[in-house]
Length: 268
Ligand SMILES: Nc1ncnc2c1ncn2[C@@H]1O[C@H](COP(=O)(O)OP(=O)(O)OP(=O)(O)O)[C@@H](O)[C@H]1O
Ligand SMILES: [Mg+2]
Image 1: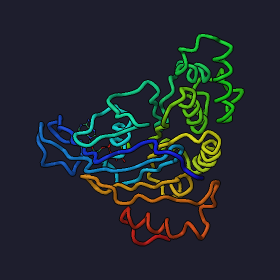
Image 2: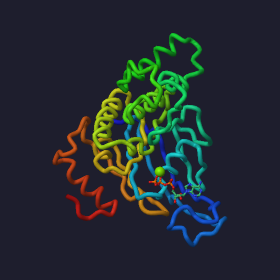
Image 3: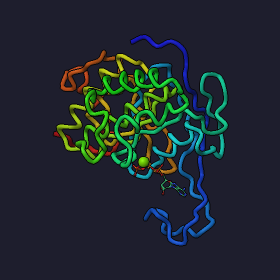
Image 4: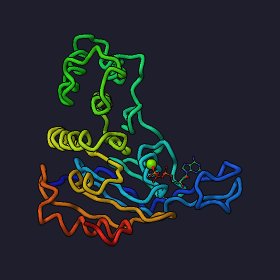
């Protein structure tokens, strides 16, 4: 696809946390004391175009979720700036909604009510019904409106979460390892569905994953972070059109590079 304008620019962003615990949560920080500063991100510069699907990879604890939270405005960077549509991010925006691993649905609400929650400001019931119906159809959950989350499979729950996020009409879709709690085959199906959905809605998406094949199938742009303090180790555009055959020869080199950049030298 051809990209138009720049959607998001991250410019020289650094992020430090202040260690609040007596015993740090991460074993790499064993020497740190309460009150010490922990540098997580260093000089992150990134330009993302409108409609791009961006996959963010990197070792555990390197700051992938932190980067998403900074872009969404839930955290403030220690240095640098983040600009979305020409305006600097200075706090959370109401349409920011994250899709995490399973578990984000309210168990006491039906699928319909969960999706409708994000558009509770829509007072016209008919209109709301139409909107919820449209998003449930998009994720192939028509007919499950009155089910409660415990009546759904893991994959269906994740689809309901995606519908809920889309219904809010987010400017950017944030997905933080959304499929990592699912079994292998369900993941493959959801990946395919996400590709189709993205082709249809073309929404700028930031998607954190540890799965290299998932990234190769989904990403228009791959961003790999290094160990902390994390810098950008790789920022690579994949121009292969969607849907992709991830075993295609043209994707072989990029897969190899990705493994190498994540520190794996021998792959099958
Ligand atoms: N609120 C906080 N206060 C102090 N340190 C924090 C806080 N949140 C995260 N950290 C530390 O910042 C680092 C980055 O955390 P983050 O959750 O962004 O990593 P991640 O790349 O998403 O990891 P994972 O792959 O395990 O999800 C970690 O070492 C974590 O311990
Ligand atoms: Mg994370």
